[in-house]
Length: 372
Image (tube, rainbow, N blue to C red):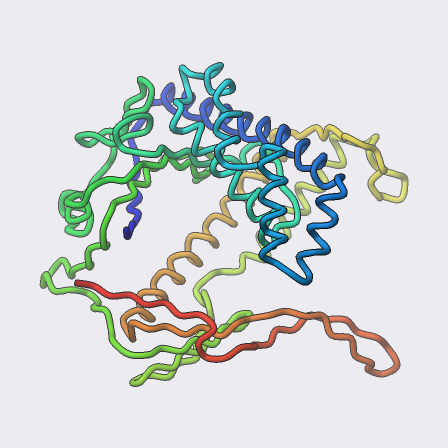
């Protein structure tokens, strides 16, 4: 099954925004509480001799090692199903704000992180800090977070969804079935704004020119090779060869950022003199509670807005570049990119720096897309 996502802004009053902010904070607390429980089980599991034996076995026989890991996870209740069971009493305590489907998706979100830790390249599980948990989603469009007749409905809360009736892409998207909905919170111009991401089933519609009605871009056919660098991208197809600078329209804002950081540092030192040594260095005190002035919070909001603008332009350019690549061909080959640290001697000094190189054959990664 193929899915695609369309994001819509919402219209809501101040009290509804307060309710949503409260629900995001509840979701963050549920995530952290569940992570705390499961981390204790994980730490107990890795202490066992069976776990160490499975690690040694993984070097010679990966299949038997994976079976051993699976048995250990079942014994110590480290599975997505167990996470769903653990989150149930937490959700029941906050049932007026968080429904069961949403709480299970929070548990699934944590399980994906644990799955990467157990079987992938993950190193640790991170707890969500205040303001870092900015999305909540449901499982279906029948219960919990759901869209109906231009409104997002969720546990007694109703948000009007803004849909442009002159936008053919959005109108064609609603002709597909809705899989589930996601509420997203974004910090825009010193305040939170809320958006609804509707996940549709099917193939995304092609965008049209408003004046002529013709398709803006069609899917190409043939092979396309990509050679990705740290800041450049080389594209080779049957008809075109390009070398592009990634996100070249993103402004640096280095002067503004430098001034804001200096203002923030002066404000922080003025509000917390006991945390600094006479030479200006920070004292090594655990659990420091920094006092932040109104000026500091204002500077912090301006800096956050700068980063948001840079991220928005960068994302827009990457999406346009992805559409351009898909228009060149339907089989895309991407070179594998690796990093390593290289030590060299120059003028009697040892210099360490990071470099990137490409390794692997042409068929290291293939994306095939077809439209009917």
